[in-house]
Amino acid sequence: MRWVTAALRGLLAAAAAMGTAELAAGALGRVSSSPLPAVGAGFIDLTPVWLKDFAIRHFGSDDKTVLLIGLAAGVAAAAPAIGLLGRRRLAWGLLGLAAFGTVGIVAALTRPVAEPVDAVPATVGALAGMAALTLLTRGTGGDARSRTAGLERRRRDTGPEPTTEPEQDAEPGQDAEPERPSAPGAEVGWRRALLTGAGVIGVAAVSGVSGRMLLRRGDVSSVRADVRLPRPVSPAPPVPAGAQVRVPGMTPFRTSNSDFYRVDTALVLPQVDPRDWTLRIHGMLARPVELTFDDLLRLALIERDITVSCVSNQVGGDLAGNARWLGAPLGPLLRRAGVLPGADQILSRSSDGMTLSTPLETVLDGRDAVLAVGMNGEPLPVAHGFPARLVVPGLYGYVSATKWVVDLKVTRFATDQAYWTRRGYAERAPVKTFSRIDVPKPFARLKAGPVAVAGTAWAQHRGIDAVEWQADDGPWRPARLAPGPGIDTWRQWVAEWDAVPGSHTLRVRATDKTGTTQPEPRSPPFPDGATGWHSVVVTVT
Ligand SMILES: Nc1nc2c(c(=O)[nH]1)N[C@H]1C(S)=C(S)[C@@H](COP(=O)(O)O)O[C@H]1N2
Ligand SMILES: [Mo]
Image 1 (cartoon, rainbow, N blue to C red):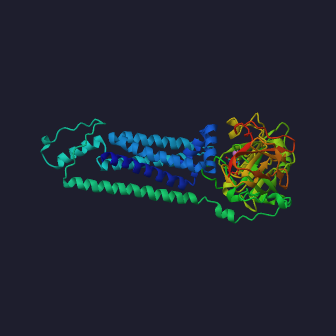
Image 2 (tube, rainbow, N blue to C red):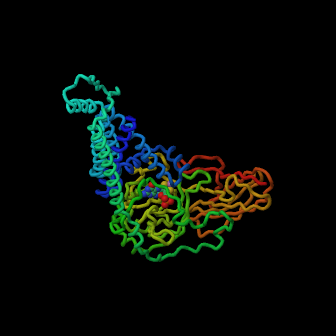
Image 3 (cartoon, helix red, strand yellow):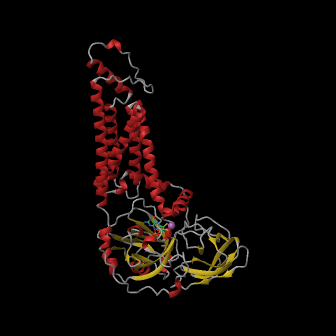
């Protein structure tokens, strides 16, 4: 029973700490300084590549929710332990809280966009948690020392008969708490303890909720709703009528914004107000420039269908999407700024301090590399980089597709490294030719007879030339390749299979327009994209 009270004291102290820290973060208007997001972001940065691949493989775009829930569960598990420590000796519980506070402070201060004030929320939280634990412990005679003190107080209160009670041993660890006399004074003590507990819960809840509300002040969704995008001076080439293969369950040729995969390191979505946004373009340039959002909208915008894909795709993976992007061509913008000889990299930075490196030659070789503001006819969704991001056809997202972009530095690979390249990923990462069976689904049960086999293939900026498929160890046969608007988008393919009863393996491979066919051997996504043929096992009855 007393253990339970002690554990509860720990939980309440932790709640007070988290709530007040949230309030402080809200008052500062800095989400990245709130302990859970800060520690989570630090955790993401320290995550080894294999664990990141595991998380993406198993949780996909939900990886961040899983991480936050995991951290909250960790706090919920540690809090009772702190309460129990405090039961042995209050100072130990306080030290535990201080240790957690320190982790929060260090995490907040080591964010790439950190400012000294970011130490405030975790500090406030730790102090509030310590105050709460002290109040609660004193109130319920919770630690060995205060129990003795309480006893002495009671002795004094109950008059001059001290010899009837044995001397209590106040050594921590020994359960020295005496039976509580049912004196009226004890009841008053418990009532006070309950009131203290209720007070702590109240402070935790009110501060936590108001902190949340204050943080929501920074939300840009209503500003986004008011953005009016100009028409492109160069509209997207038409998408041929047959680009969408008509097979039930087939992937849509155009990915809607709500279905578009999301991969980034941002635990909390950056809220960037376009009215405050500027893009600094500097480094090895004769004439560095700085653009406001209005400047950007006044440029001659183009609209293009471009497929974006992630290096973390396993064979058959679905971290790819095809959208219609509206944006300013990046190549001409850099040329006007006068690229100096020797430069070979664009180091881009997002508002949350994430860095991506892009080979300069890919942006200057005439492809439709854009500083995008629109996605499928709307301003970019916040999760996809509002108000502006990069899109470079032909490169994996981690070397090209910077969301919430605020800074472009023209530099050299020998001088600057970006987040993922520093972690061993390839500097030059053209998308590998990729083909996937979308229908039938793995382990589908099918009726014997004609079955439509269909899927998606991509090799952005080289283009897909042919897709072949195979049932079991039969011959490779050409699939019908659906038309597409150009070499920067994926293509759909379909074939008719005369399915006979039994268990079967279907395989697919694509050839790009340089004449290179996907290799069979499987390699993992690290360091420059997975290879191998996708296969699906089905049962025909
Ligand atoms: N600011 C920022 N931009 C980023 C990333 C990121 O972590 N932060 N991830 C990149 C990666 S790895 C990919 S695959 C694409 C994914 O873009 P999407 O989330 O819009 O699909 O964004 C890229 N741009
Ligand atoms: Mo990615």
